[in-house]
Amino acid sequence: MEYKTEEKEAFGRGKVKVLGATFEEGKPEDVKMGKWREKMTNRKEMLKYIETGERYWYSKDWYGSEKRKKPA
Image 1 (tube, helix red, strand yellow):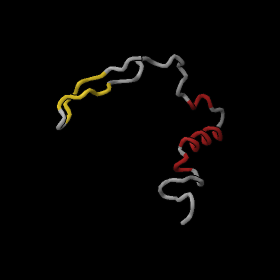
Image 2 (cartoon, helix red, strand yellow):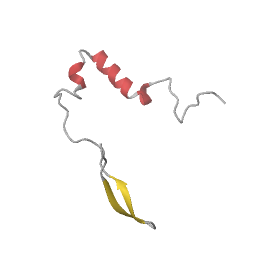
Image 3 (cartoon, one colour):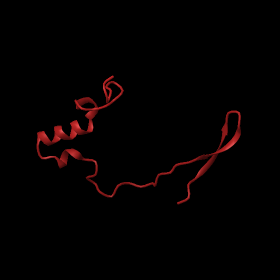
Image 4 (tube, helix red, strand yellow):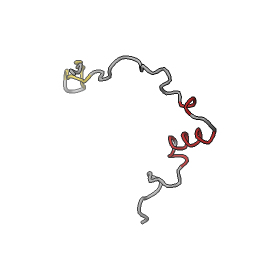
């Protein structure tokens, strides 16, 4: 696959080559792709799916900038 490049004006450097779009155009073939609600059978499964996706907010066991992995 060959990538498209564009020439742009860079501040203080003149013209430079910049990488263009790298995605392949098109649409997904599966119509149901991304419709997660239809895949779940009950409320418990839906809540589990959301909690997993939003684990930053729902998890009690995570290591972000607010909590150290090893206590000081």
